[in-house]
Figure 1 (spheres, rainbow, N blue to C red):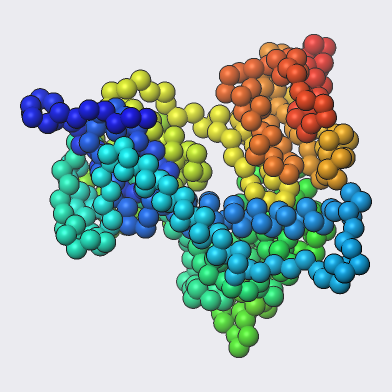
Figure 2 (figure 1 turned 90 degrees about the horizontal axis):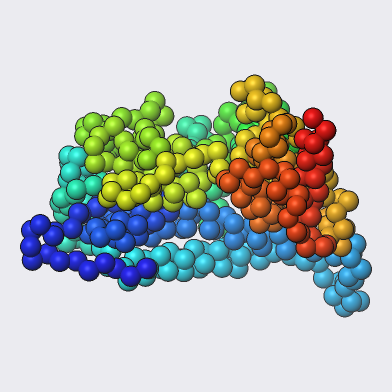
Length: 482
């Protein structure tokens, strides 16, 4: 993408000035689109380009999980006929967590540097610091990295707020960065926790619990609900919980963590049922809090929800003309892909380009556990709640020839379709690298393909994607019977 020519000698040609608050996926993607459409763009970011997604959240956690995945693969080696030599048999696989976390942080910093370089090449100004709205067309830079930028005023034609969220903490379990931790602090550890208590069984809690279990830590997962991942497909969540338990993880369901405190050699976590769980470390993974406090948003007329999220419509507009918002600070969906799309849509709308409103029904998401859980389109719960007619089938991966070759026993493909039209409504894939396998179902949902369209498409033999085609054939036969 080449930067557009900018002419400033004639006031009529002075470009629109877009000020972006936050350099995460929502912010930097918006900046690139705005620049390509001829705007002058300034990005104000306090942490580093890429934001939390790159520096403390998505990139670091998925890098850690990728390391843990190799430990999971190693467990299957004997089934595939791989044996250690006599000398090597005396050594067990172990994890050097200091080296792992060093690599994790180095990769995050490298990715952040790549993003900065891309923005600078496109002629986008980057200001280190935080931004506060003085009005709907003026931003003041605070806590600037460069003293010359402190208090700098940026007059803007359009403002995009993409300031993300930070981990929510409990007043009775205040993180200290050593024993009581948020997920952003996990990369400071230099030794594998002897016993890690994970509070919260949502996506973040499940991912870290699974990763540290695979790395060799004793893990206790505390869930306030009946099962892990309460917001996900029930069959997928139940399968994953079964895998967790089979690998030695302790899952404590239907109980909340009331408090966590340091002990002489670790932590003590008090549960709502009166039990006390002792561990070496505790991870608090109970959601996030939007970064919207103290930014002058409400004073500027921007409407916030009761939880502090910025209210936006499907083209990312806030309640104030000229002010847009994207990403986790909006509470729409806590996914980097959604943040990026919101940012792109915001700039297309603000600068008069053709724009299609955000369609959450076509968003694909993935949980990076082992196995992974990928979903797209309508969930079964949503179809039931809205009274939609649908047909479904679930095929286990255990009978897939490629899965047998790879030693994969756990996982399945589930599809939902309209009973008469045969249109694919949604799908779930539970498998290693499920995030890669969900793409054909995403295409089907996005373009309203039928199960016949999917069934009639070629797949590689043998391949895990063959199960997706087989599931489509099963549903297509049921559609034809009607």
